[in-house]
Image (cartoon, rainbow, N blue to C red; front, side, top):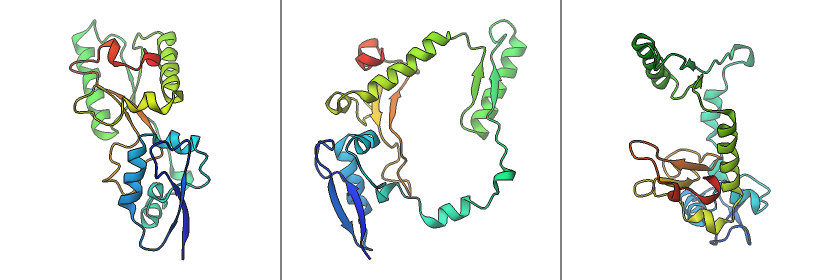
Length: 192
């Protein structure tokens, strides 16, 4: 049985999208490579007007079944919230906060902070800068693609594109901030 799948087979995904009929012998590697070579990311697929989510983004059915056994009533999620108030004034408070950060990082992989001292206007400006970056023409974004070993700023669609069982439906503007943050001129102009 054939399935219809839309992927990019050319460098500029916005101008032309190829329709491929997939047979049971689906070639995931070729689809991943075609997607990766466009450097357009998920935004490029959306801008191209795809009508179906490409198979490379589909999670294996057994994985979905294993993760869907919990009822909605049993799901109670509370993302760790860490209050930074007093982190600079009191060594005891600092140790407690550092321990909370360590614990949240180990058990959750992320956390939310409050009383960090960053003005709301700066946070809103950062979000606006990221949106402006993603809305740019593909040719501008291509400069920032993939190479996180030599570039402090990268445009990445999937960190583990070739190794994960399913690609993630997201694009990322990635900035290495420590130990050496990027210089202002290394950041995308619209995101400064």
